[in-house]
Image (cartoon, rainbow, N blue to C red; front, side, top):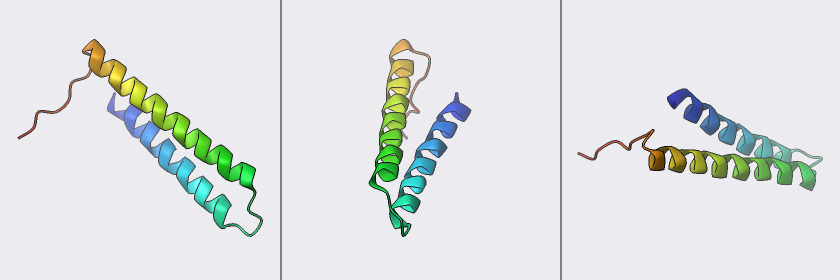
Length: 66
């Protein structure tokens, strides 16, 4: 379970980096930035839904505080 979540987080950060690189390039194309940020949002929402579904089904439990 943890490798899947870690892979999703790395994909989110990579997509954000790709958008930043596209934005900083001299030939910045708005569509490249928009696609990278759209992918980042989609991955974030999918990860959130996956975590909530796992928690709701009892497959995953949060760490206790303290």
